[in-house]
Image (cartoon, rainbow, N blue to C red):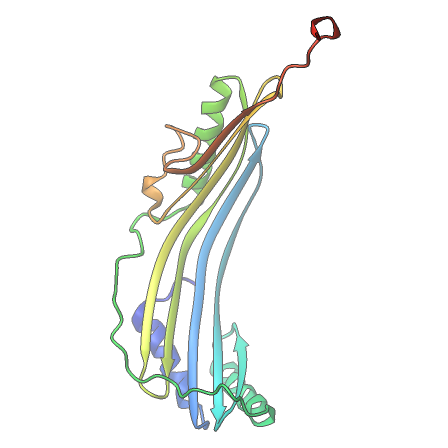
Length: 224
């Protein structure tokens, strides 16, 4: 299932709430569309992708609560998910830490999603740029790039509703010299895949780097 828009997500959550008979009910949707690529010894070894959306329903009767989840969204499954949460709530012990659900809130909406998408093509190109940069300097690289788009939507029976979409890219690489005596490591992350510049450096913008050179063995003849 694709990343849901705010209107699509809230319409689904509103439908789910309509099936509730609990004193209080809170529902949430979490979804992602992400991908990754891994390479070692200047060659791609694995690549993968994940695309999922899941629903969580919390039902409350007094101080008792129950939670059920599902990842199918036909009416029958949605109703059964709500019913299951209510069944669990009725069997659950009262919580001494019970707090009522929040009502309507005013949330900040900072820009957290980039217009540029991290596609399989851009992941492959970033890995290729990193490997080419290292190969040109007679170095061996091993790296991992992971990222994509995520969203979360909330709604409850007290009138609270919220939605946020975000993007993120993480890239890490380890580089070794041809003789195996030196190595370096870099890692970086960005909310906008367009800011990833693997051709200029193994990871940009780097947040951590280190380089190590193994000591040369000494000859017994040179030992005092």
